[in-house]
Structures are given as C-alpha cells and as structure tokens.
Image (spheres, rainbow, N blue to C red):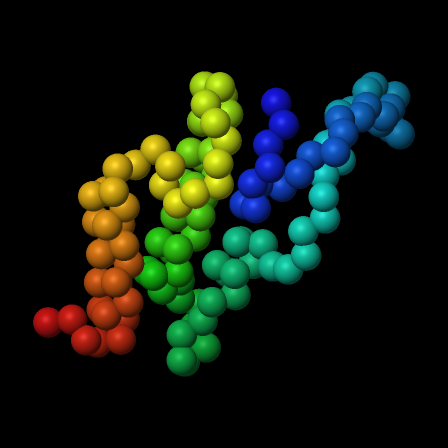
Length: 116
C-alpha cells in the first residue's frame, strides 16, 4: 500500500543485513529523513518558568493529537480501499470536528487564564 500524507513518514525500502556479531539477518527500514525534534524531545525539554520540567500545554497536546488522528484516519481509509484524501477529520462528522475545535479553544483560554 502506498500512502502520501504530510504526517506520515515515507518508507523507501525494507532491507536485511547480517548482524556483525551473530551473522543473523536483521531487518531495517529505509525511510525519509525528518529533521527537527522528536515528540519525546519536545516533551522532555518543556520546562516551566522556574526551570522545572513541566507537562506540555494542553492546546499543544491536542494539536499534536489531531494531526496524529488525521494521519490514522487516512491510513484507515487506505486499508478499507476508500479514496485517499488528506483532509481534517475525514471520518468524523462536522459536529464532532466542531466539538474538538471547541476543546482546543477552551484549553487555550484556560492556559491564558481567560476562562471562568
């Protein structure tokens, strides 16, 4: 199955090479290079104003989550043989998408101290 989505790394090849110590074949995935920081680096590198490690802001977690959900929905459509389109929430109805956006907006307001 070939996929083309901005949130899914492109895999170029699968290869096997002998392990230098055991001689047994070891599988490798050859994929496109993605520059930048990993999610783990972002998580571990986030600190509060006192320099202590702190949880990521909710709006950032939700934003990453939505991007991941979009990629998963795309893969599910590919698996089911449906048309592959890169759109926001292709398997969710419009009301569900509005509710998710409302949660993001509320999280932003809570972080900024604007919510009552």
